[in-house]
Amino acid sequence: MLVVYMTLGYPDNERYLEFMEEAVKNGADILEIGIPPKYAKYDGPVIRKSYEKVAGKFDLWSFLPETRKVIGGTKAIALTYLEDWVQELDDFLCKLKRAGLDGVLFPDLLIDFVDDYQTYSTRVREKGLNNVIFTAPSVPDKMILQVSRQSDLFLYYGVRPTTGIPLPITVSSLVTRVRNLVDNKLVVGFGLSDENDLRKALKAGADGAAIGTAFIQAIDNGGVKQAIDLVIKLRSVLDEF
Image 1 (cartoon, one colour):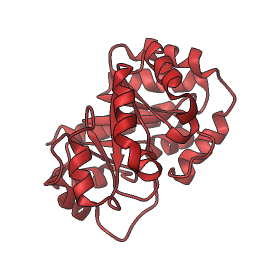
Image 2: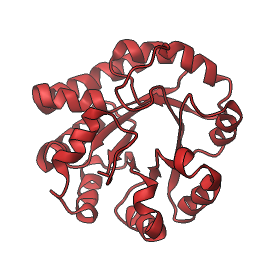
Image 3: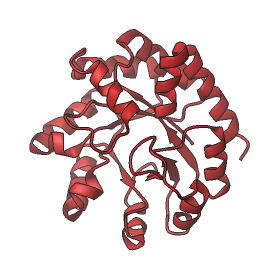
Image 4: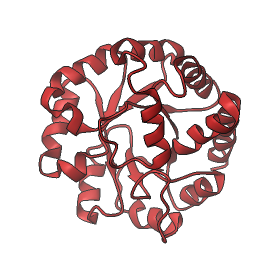
């Protein structure tokens, strides 16, 4: 399962839509759309800069439907912070549904709202959306087991404290540890950067990977074509397993 992340509207609206459309054509299974938050405290420097670049350059609720038009029926989930929307959560979720999204992932759900995560998960589903849960090596095993059964589509397991920031522990070790705990599809992200990292994760038992930082860097370095070339390369690695 290849989950392709891109910040909404990055690097500009035209190239963002081109990337999303071509990513689907070249092997993305699920698209993850980053909605710029007020404070991206769990994202790495590359994604934080992408948020800063696009902030205020589009209307969220008119631009998300444009994304849906170019990606067809491919599943798309929003990635944003619950703390930004918690005071107007029901309205936010209804708007996501009307905009054509299939689900939402709040990276701060199990960190800043852990005592109420089941309540928020229920509210997401009540609006007809999938609730994809993000977890990490710092989460106790008992809770990883519990939330793996409640996460829709897949369980997102971040192998780094923030995107693109390495830890002195191998990807293989982290994935092997959590594989037996997870009663769900296991998608690894938050730090996988290339095909070698992806192979290590898949060999250790992951069902797929979520990649974001590497696509943003590819667009910055060589435009949409270079980013799509990376989609093709990662797709080919997934197809080896």
